[in-house]
Length: 330
Image 1: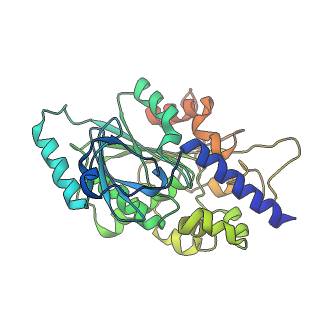
Image 2: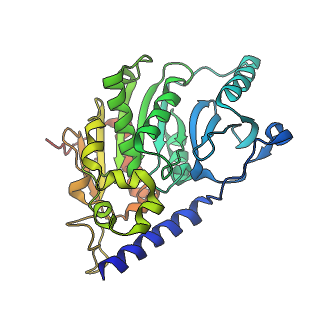
């Protein structure tokens, strides 16, 4: 019975994510003259990882083919080819200028497993409307590579940003683990761009900070790894190895955990109160400056208006409550 429920749950989640994100299969774009045509992308967003951001221009790499592409702020592909070729083409565009003054503050949104940068569209618009920050939606091929590769791409993107902006982070689910891995890498491997000193605040939405019990229990089903890839396995049976590379953020950070019940129904694959995917206990991380529980499902945390209010408030004040009171974790 549990196995049947597990498969149904995974397939349902995958269908919801795919239909929401329009993640088509990638189509080769580097053959012949196609590489230089300025055309809309053909989808496949879950196969591409952002490597560079420059005032909305992005260099992305396909995790299946290693080919790269250069997109303009309107998501139109201007060039396809090697990473070096895309860097050179962007350098030409940069040299044409002029460009605005570098942003003083950047908020980077990191989506979760099997999601894309589009999942933060609503919250991103609110952040840009209600704060002076520039929002960057970091997209990465969450099911196509291990967390370490996602973290490496995030580090490269942040280190190459224009100027020396303050960096705030907003993560959903596994996006928080990618950010914690990147911070851990800067701490152990060096921080040439001085990013750690520029970290401002970090809001974690539904983070599996203690691993994901549901991933461990679903590991017995062959469909789990097929759908979630290496990253999904790392959140489950390979968590002990992964967590050795994760840092506690050296900046102010707050955690929003979901606790949702549909009548008497609870997900039998997750113990205790949960958002049906991550339990409240799994979301906790010692050292958090504030912690709050909301009655929202995991997949809808970033779109919930109350969660958005909490996120905006913490980014601006360092507390979830409007009176400034905090509920820190020891």
